[in-house]
Length: 168
Image: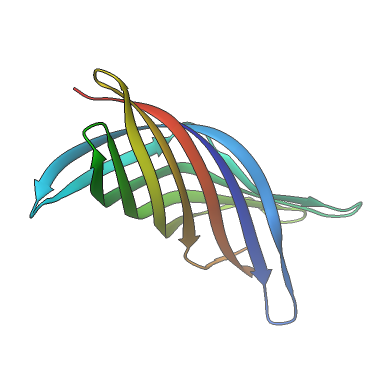
């Protein structure tokens, strides 16, 4: 799958705050999923792992800089699905996300911390040939607030994903 991920972050301490658009990234991911019928509803249970790191924010002036990255991101999820036709489904997803956040600032050591989040998403999947499906999904992940480099970092990501699935 390929994702376009847009992040925003708010940094604050006891005297000031900075909030704004972070950055947009394109990243690949791989995943596995199990589907089962539960009470007439198709239930998808799965997980995915991002292949690379995502730049959350990169900010610099002539005298200072700040960068924040997300690494080793994975997600586990449950997604009830509605069968639209014999070849298509629509689903909503609730996911738990875990990543490693890394912050580097001028005059401070690089810090890393585990960050957790919750994703809400919706998507469509349709068969294009025998066991190959086209997927499209949009979602939002809200991460827990972390104290890094003496400030609180509150991050979120909005993403759109397109990809192919193969049924075994």
